Length: 120
Image (cartoon, rainbow, N blue to C red; front, side, top):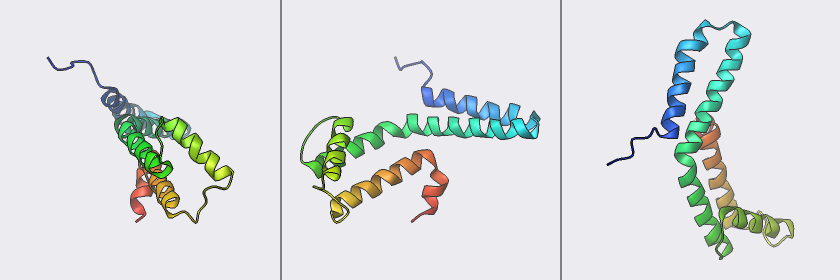
């Protein structure tokens, strides 16, 4: 039997849509701005829930290849930061620059997809 529980991204989407459609239009201008902020935050949470696991897995895989070692995403990021801080890696490292570019693109896809989509 398939899982019949609501999926978190879907629940966030329903709440966001309802706020935007039913509540936002009736608000005064000062409250309308704040509700738009809330709606945008919920959209970011929804994208993070939907896309975050795959983006994190891709980042971890890139870091494993870059660093030549295993570990959790947090451990790998700490190791990369240590290598950058102590001068073992810098912007002359094309693999590092590509990893940073892909990581930034992934973050923008979640946090501000309109901006990231405009950049090519």
